[in-house]
Image (cartoon, rainbow, N blue to C red; front, side, top):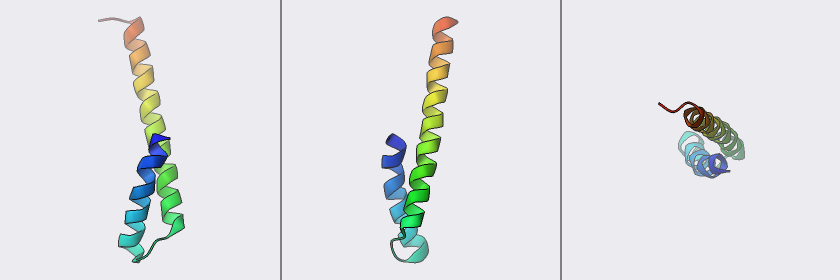
Length: 57
């Protein structure tokens, strides 16, 4: 969800900068890409926290 919220304004601004007008395709690509990256980052953080909890230093 956070990735989608981050991707919407990025896609809107980038489509205006690149095309000079709003393009829905750019926005949807940035939403999907941001959602994927934020999801992978959250998964990595969760796995690291679980590993550190099981293996205290």
